Length: 192
Image (tube, rainbow, N blue to C red; front, side):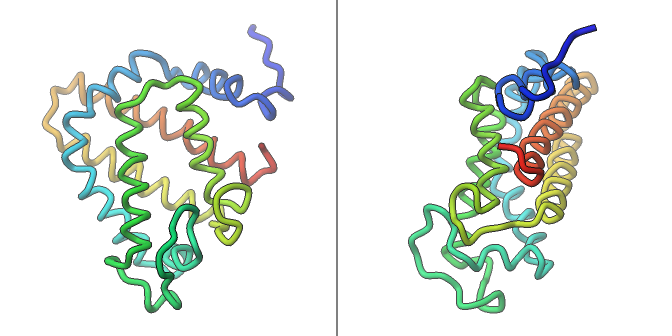
């Protein structure tokens, strides 16, 4: 039996990620499968990003979080939710961020820098990082991750890859998205 320092899981991000990755079986074969999907997924990232924002605009509970100033955005803000359109500059700014996130998932090494990046993805949606005005409730983050997961998995299923590659790629992304989910959830439960 392997001993795990449970208090360290809350204070040491690389230790936490390493433990979770080992527990769910996320390893080099998964990373290779994710990187192997890059050539297939890169051309459809813009369509995937558009689908995510179309979905986010379907509900006031998700759309309202794009009205406050976002970290790094210096442009004009919409006056309210009704004035916010999919072609507003702040939405184009956010779409670029999501596109870079998806590209990063399939192209970067899964080292400490990447683990920190994945952690910031969770933190940035709370007042703990980025904009103090931005506080996306956990239920909305979980809804978003569920939608992104389903859209990504459906996309992989539609790539026409052989069944072994499809299976490995689906499993790899599934594990990765569970790891990402933990690094989002920890910022809502008092984790640092």
